[in-house]
Image (cartoon, rainbow, N blue to C red; front, side, top):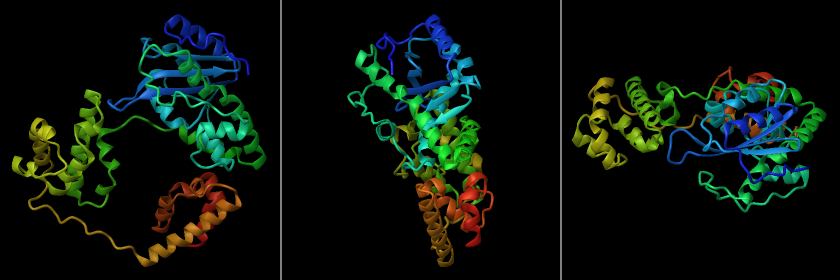
Length: 365
């Protein structure tokens, strides 16, 4: 594959970005990848954007550009297939800058439906399908540092150079297997995903709250929303605002005063000193009765339920083996447990999964 001559020069100005977008828009496919950081922030910091089509491969430097607005028409073009590997995080990171991407091809999803391991990495897939070994010399690069070397840029562009041939080969495999419609369903779900976070729903991230009494759940919702909004407004990780362990302690123990706050082992001293008054105000506003309801006892497994799940797992494994698919692609254990409990609106009973395994699972219930 022919490489562009100025690989070591990232795009750093709006005029060059507009020119590159105009060139890339003339093709049928567009490979994309991102390098980002979010260890110290709430929102991911986009540090580098790699784009590639046919013989044109470029890096865009979002840290040098005020805006990526010239790329919006390119990303929204319905006739241009955007190829990514393990696309979800990239789509989430890109959405604020370039909007929603239309016509996405995720090579990891395609590979899984073609019989490769469920979470196969890009390098392994390139080696398995294209016979190319990618160098790993820059895997620990800090992509926020400038300037980037020619070796770093070349390494970054390797992440898009092989996406078009991967798409072609994987598309052919899916067609031969009769699974193109399956893949289209998966991409439609990915394209319709909403990456916006609702602070009022943030408490649902912690599974331990699912079985609590309504009063504690109300408190969990209020504390979770407070934490999420503070993290958003300060652009700091939610765990810096209030660690998960401290949030659980607050909800489980319902402290009413400073002395009770001091007894929470998971609540850092700094957070207690700086935000303790606000936390106590939220607890008061939640109006949890004193004393609160007893915490639920740990449930003992229901033998009949376990037997149902075991039967469903066996069926899923057998059906997956017959299709040469990883079992978790066909059905996860959580989905099987939900089905065993009587849930009938899950993914196992919709679309291609109902055809492939769902109908068979229902017969066993």
